[in-house]
Image (cartoon, rainbow, N blue to C red; front, side, top):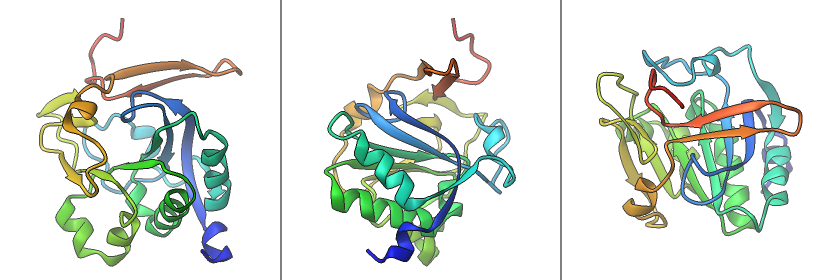
Length: 195
């Protein structure tokens, strides 16, 4: 891959090196910053604005992921909207899958038809195993299997993940960082008591 791909900027809201609520197994999870879709009732409204987060390079994030191998099964890209930065996502996924046997999952508000109709978005998921696609619909909450709402569909691109593995993903995870930062992640239904 060309050096220019590794220095591609990516606006990132947050990174969690180990998560069990963002896909099967231990996963390196990246939340992109920025989402023009802004689905009503979205779980992560703080990721919508373009001004938040930090700019990282694809190479920095690839190195961070590879530093977690062999302890992780894969990578999950979520947001915000990862496919609003398709060049960074495409470069990242190509590098990660070329350099390690890691599964890649993308959670997006775009539908499969919208992704396939846009060459940049289609290129962004070329090296992805599973895309969970579709706008979040707060009137159809399910909060299981990486789907926040029942209208979201699995676009299985490689067969790496079985439906039973997706159904077994915990709906909520609370992580305490070494600096005292608390991260709550997963698909727990909004408004539901956490404890």
